[in-house]
Image (cartoon, rainbow, N blue to C red; front, side):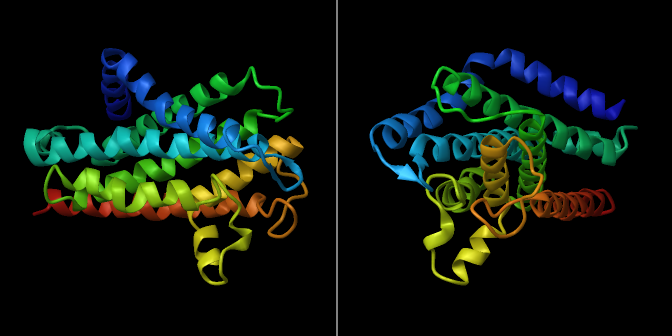
Amino acid sequence: MGILAVLWEKWTEFKRDFYKITVAALVSPLLYLIVFGFGIQTTSHGEPYLNFLIPGIVSMATMTGSFSAVAQNMSVQRLYEKALDQVMISPTPLWQFIVGQIIGGSLRGLYAGCMILLLTSPIRTGLIFNGWTFLIMFLNGMVFSTFALVLSFLAKSYTDAPRYNAYLIVPMSFLCNTFFSIDQMPGGFRQFINALPLSQASGMIRAISANGSLDGLFVTGEYPYGWAGLLILLAYLVVFSLLSFVFIYKKKNL
């Protein structure tokens, strides 16, 4: 019941701010599509650049949508509204509250990614988007929802949430296999960027859009992302989820 209560809160917030949420999910990706996709006529891996760009923007949209849905709201609830304190003294199990936040944030990211797919659907690219695509979008959203939870517990003031976005989310948006391939990055730095969750999500969605599935895709090759990418995202999800549980239960026991 606690999970459903959190999801209902997220749904109520979504209905109230539907137009704001939708516009925020579309403005930046639309600008990127216009500037990079249509303004710069080039190719990537022997294909039109749009075929490379669209999966990257979809992945980025799931990241930013999920992160923003959780980070700022949780920071405000914890630091100013003190709503988190009310949750702690309520009968709601804290693990259900955490899981509800993760799923709710991921659904917001999935919505943002689906809006990009809808926006780009009239463009004849030949890209394939199927159930695997939506699974990775949802999983990527869960990872960044837990990431947002951890950072919101670390935040000391309301202004920390925008700082985290500027210091962490924006650099990942541009570096993690979204707008350009990481193949030409210097050794060491390339491996570090490749290990980040957004790089894996972008690579897997791009591979699926070209092949229709993850079958036969391994760590090397033209699309160096396959089943191992799912394991990497799941590892991030487990680690950040455990950290979220540690923070909230530690706060309850203070």
